[in-house]
Image 1 (cartoon, one colour):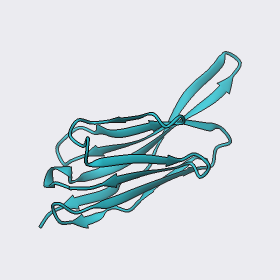
Image 2: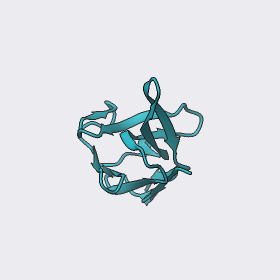
Image 3: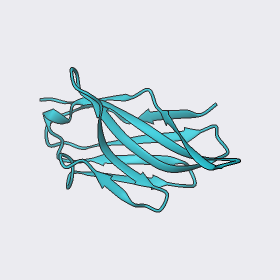
Image 4: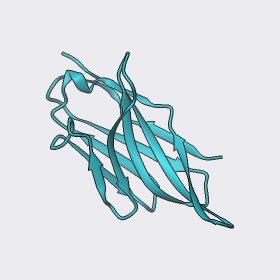
Length: 123
């Protein structure tokens, strides 16, 4: 049973920082991509940042220069360092782990999501 568990959310003032962590466990297969997504009230879930097993990263334009994603492949853990936070960063932040699973045809990918952690930026 794969588990994806986020931590590190909370309340922070505008201009402050938070660090989110996400640990994936319970599968013998390798994780190809780990990423962070967020969903604000009344809005669709959106991509924040991703990192693959080679360290290649992608970021939403709205967080470039403020957020940094990193990963520990040994611990199957991904981090999101969030600096210069703005009220519009307020959302539930979700972690996704994409596993690469072998089968008789080659490989396929399987996604697993965490339950989310609330980030609130407010004075």
